[in-house]
Image 1 (cartoon, helix red, strand yellow):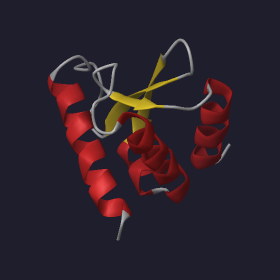
Image 2: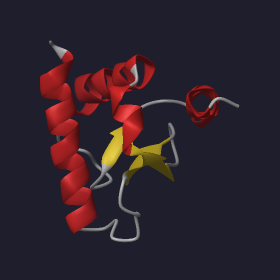
Image 3: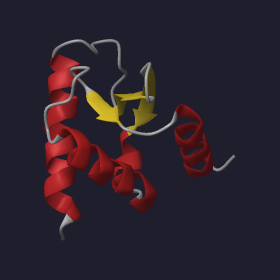
Image 4: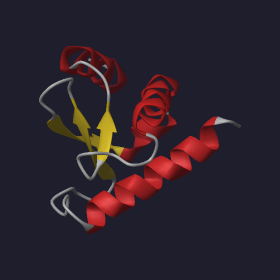
Length: 93
């Protein structure tokens, strides 16, 4: 289960985010920052953390940032249009 440690670290980042900047995130959701140059904030259901395609983004985030994310919350190093496409598929649209 190589993904489990990554998920646990993502959970810590999300908790820091909730305790710090992202208090407006509803229960059962978490905030991420996405984009190459300018970061846009997205609020996602925590169920996404169980999705293999989303877990791949978490691995990419870990490889690029480690566990020190520049925005104070979970930062996903992905183009916004690709991220929206992925989350739309996870939503079933």
